[in-house]
Image 1 (tube, one colour):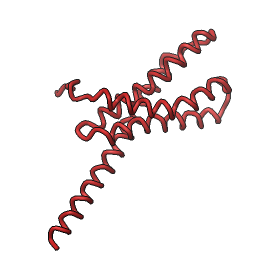
Image 2: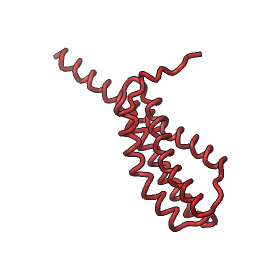
Image 3: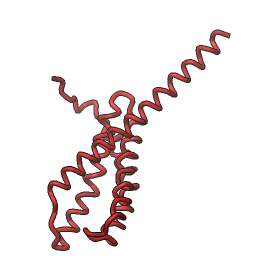
Length: 144
């Protein structure tokens, strides 16, 4: 079983990607918390999709930036994005006298992690494809 060496984590990459993800997630989260209640129905799904897009954006940004461990950085960036938004949401619920659903917090954290890894995986795939295309282009010019 291998362990993660935390020295390979570029916290600057994670912070930058989490900032981008938070920018995407924050607006829908604020609007959803201000306008919607727990029984709002199908429009809640729209805000969930927008939030998931923010977690994907965090993962994508981290995956483009770090070539050695893109999925690790994508996962950490998405979790950092989630933590920022969730802490604000938990504080709002506690101040408002609402219950905090611990299971929902955990499930959504796992969902954000998966989106971050997915975004990083896609970014890494595109980055590798671009590198292969550049290498093929260079080789074709050398053979001329």
